[in-house]
Each structure stands twice: as structure tokens, then as C-alpha cells.
Image 1 (cartoon, rainbow, N blue to C red):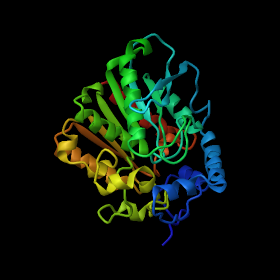
Image 2 (cartoon, rainbow, N blue to C red; image 1 turned 135 degrees about the horizontal axis):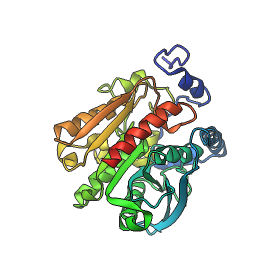
Image 3 (cartoon, helix red, strand yellow; image 1 turned 60 degrees about the vertical axis):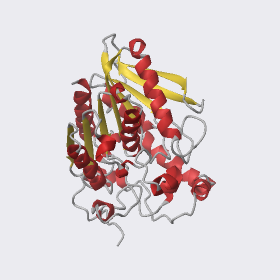
Length: 343
């Protein structure tokens, strides 16, 4: 049965009003990555993306997320091992104080969107206003170009995120950040990449480069619906329609079939996460991804990781990254994230 937004009394009324602007419809399955890339880059599909980005621009509000008192800059760096160029946006309080850093990875299913979209520009300012330096990494998407050239499936985006993190660590002094207080954070696909990055660093013996992880509504299962996770059924259609295989093909169906936790952290074992630093898993009550995030939190506890879970009631998927929609919730989550990064 299709989701009925009008009669869902769980949702904050402000979120219900905004969700009406987002087109959510059933998507057909595909048979290959090539097919979904072609479908996602037709004139009609790109026009739809432009419409969504126009909505995202609405969140770039100086009233909700002022830039006064902040210093904003950009860097272009070379990513390994492919030698492609990626970008970093750096947003910090305009002070010479050495600050904790939140290395933030944007969402979009590892496939779409950009840290330069209006909602992310605002979200970075909201976080930085809490007294931390925010570095947003612009990596290669798997379906549609972001603000850097090229699209590529796993592991391109993950490698770009690792390259950016290593650059930040190496240039901590110049950036005015405490190299011992770098927290990796991200929502949705960025939550996937945050958890995968910690596992990848752990396999290389370098997980010590980060002091914590803050993953919001991580997109990690790779297949939906999943009867183990009721939210994948009861919440499907609230901002997201996940009952198709398009995104899995886009990022890495072969890796899903191999149960590779670096591509799909829902496959992670206790051994995969045992080296994790302190980690927060934050989920949204009315999100299809809620239960897979909760399952990952319980895996961390089983592995002995110092983990904390939180659920934001009345919210849809990644509601916090739309500051104009629910500014109080956005600021509350940003404060929690910054406090965690500063410990």
C-alpha cells in the first residue's frame, strides 16, 4: 500500500509540509550499472535533479545559518590512487584558536548530490557555529557528477574520502585544527562512507587518524525491503523509495554480492568494527533506514566499541540537514556532534 503522508501523525508538521515538495515515486529495477547510469542522466532525470537542487537551495538561509563570524575557504587536492582532483570546503569560526575538526561526508546514496548544494552549505555553517572546524569533502559520485569531474562506482568515492582525510591530517597545523581531534561524520550515503572509511583505515593500521565517528541515518544495507528491519517497509515512501535495486547497481552490485562491508557496511562483522574509535549512530524515527542503523549500533556494542545511539523522534530521513525546515532540530544535532568531537 502506498505511503500516506497526510495521515502520518508521527511526523513533525514542519517536515510534513516540506516533504510535499519532494517527488517520491516507485522506481523500477534495473539489470546493470550501465542501465541506471543511462536512466539517471537523461534530460528528464537531470531536470528532476535540478528541481530537487532548487529545493535544497531554500535551506541556504542566513537567518537560520549565518556566515557572520565564520571563515570559509576551499582547497583542491589530488586523490589517490586515481590521480583525480577533489575539493574540500573548510568552514570554521574566524579565530586563530586550534579547534576540533569534523570531517563531513555528504549524503546522496554515494551516487548523487554535492556538498556545494544549498542545504549542505547551510548545514556546514550550523555545525561550525558550535565551535568546530568543518571540512566537507567533495568526492566522485557513482551516478551524477558533483562539483568534481567524473563518476565512478565503489571504491572511487571511498578512496576520495580517505585521500581528503589524510590531507586534512597532514595539514592540520595550517588549518588550525587539532590533529588528535578529527571526527568523521556524514549522513545517509555519507554515513555509509564514514563507517567504511573507519574500516578501511583499520585494515591499513591507520584508524588512529580519527578520534571518533558520527554517522547519521547510515545507508548501509544494500537491499530493501528487508524483513529483519521493519522500518524498510513501514517507512518506505517517506522522502525515499528504496524498494528497487537502482542504487545498489549504481554503487556496487558485485560488492553487494560479495558481501563486502567496505561497500555495504551492513555486512560488517564484529572483527570488522572492533578497532573503531568512539562512535555515535543517530537515526530518524520515520526513516526507512532507521533499523539498519540501530542494528549497526548493536554490532558496535557487541564488538566492545564505545558507542552511543540516538533517535530523533518525529523526523524523516536526514531531516537535520535541512536547517530551514527544522532549525531547532538541526542545531540540536549539530551541538551534539560538536560536543562529541570536542571531547
